[in-house]
Image (cartoon, rainbow, N blue to C red; front, side, top):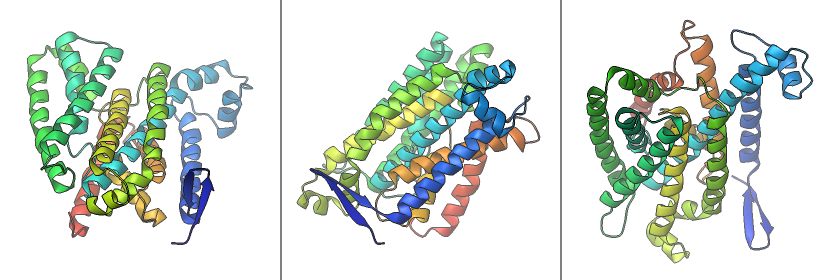
Length: 342
């Protein structure tokens, strides 16, 4: 693929027209879906009414309250969660060199869920405590998997995936035990959280997710070239001045933090981190790890899933985690049937 290199002092950026076009199209689709979702609900609104309300020129106080307090936080949460999961999945698949290397497959999402369940079942924690526990447990699970998958001084590859699946299975069993131990009300609260949902999202969910996303993304983009070189092999990367294990650890921690932030904001969301990077890579056709395209694709996929869960599921308004889980199961079967490397 042809491209150009843009240089600014000590920094450089490889410009690929096809990647730029794909990113622009995905961003436009995300904006269109967001506007559509802001008008969907028990109080249907036209795109014109949505724009008027967003710009502060609406003459319908009820519509303004619904958009500003209910629908806009939900849509922004979906954008941030989808973007975080898409970028995290891209990092995991690159480091593990495996199409199944996504946080929901290799146990990191389950680890974050374990922390949240402990807080809900044992301590009856509120949203803030649950979110904090999910973040800390997700990071702790990642460190455990990273250490257990280390062979000599090298990690990654199939070993990382297999160890993650094993740790995730153990934590899933622990989660089941905790649900059985808890009383009915707390167990029901935990089950609702485990379903993954964008319902009742407020600005208290949007702000932490946005701050975390803004803080982590520059770290990921700053190491983008390092992870690209890492895909050429540890020996080659070392010869080019890259410290493989240091880069791998930094990127794993960044990806886990993105996953934990997404899980804390909306609960466990399957499929997005698995599919978004692969779809983005197919669309861009670029050899680099598709960090930004995967983030945009993740946001689009989650917005589409949210729209389907609200409008096409027999008016059941399914939790978003169940919708993406169903889609992810079919996608995984298709991936396994077509790929010779998985």
